[in-house]
Image (cartoon, rainbow, N blue to C red; front, side, top):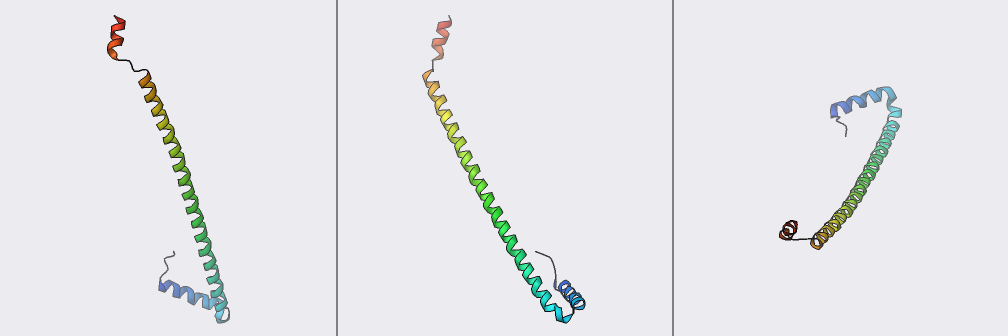
Length: 98
């Protein structure tokens, strides 16, 4: 997540030790660990919720697309039926005009 190397981590530890002192350092480390754990859990929950919502949107979109395809198929069948009902050979149309 963060690009912190060993050297940077050691510098942060030494500065925290100088600022907080050896008495309060274990408590500060414990609190920092708890906060990081909470942050990671909340981040994971949010990511899972977003993935679930995206999945639900995909399902809704797929159902909508299926409804459109069924509608198009019904329209196509109706057009074919109408074409067959009104299908008149071209020769008879030309003969009637003369």
